[in-house]
Image 1 (cartoon, one colour):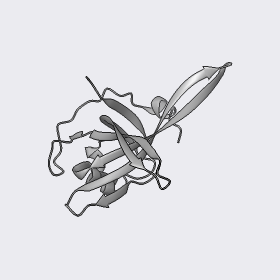
Image 2 (image 1 turned 90 degrees about the horizontal axis):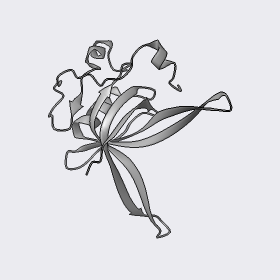
Image 3 (image 1 turned 60 degrees about the vertical axis):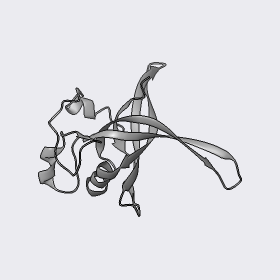
Image 4 (image 1 turned 90 degrees about the vertical axis):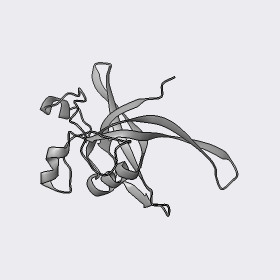
Length: 150
């Protein structure tokens, strides 16, 4: 059985970060991805919004470096949260639990940090130590950026 999600998209707003009493950190972000298709000879666009949940080191990185509009590549798995609303109705919400994250440029913290934007950080790593450079096999260049919705 496999539960794996790969997304490349743009942040819809700044991360919402919570520091928990037990020392853990959790961040929630919304990520927009786009699909393009042709209908009646016209290029159409469909934007899909994804709720992402980042824990501990990923959450700290998001808090310090990610802002609305940044492009990120994430790998994770689908999770379902169940809760009961105020009227007593049981509800579910789907989210992506991020296991790996890579920024694709445009960090807001410090221009010197941009050299680190191609470094993948995995969930198992501790601290903010860089991992080996890994190629995500994603297209680059202005022709790719033109397809982005923002």
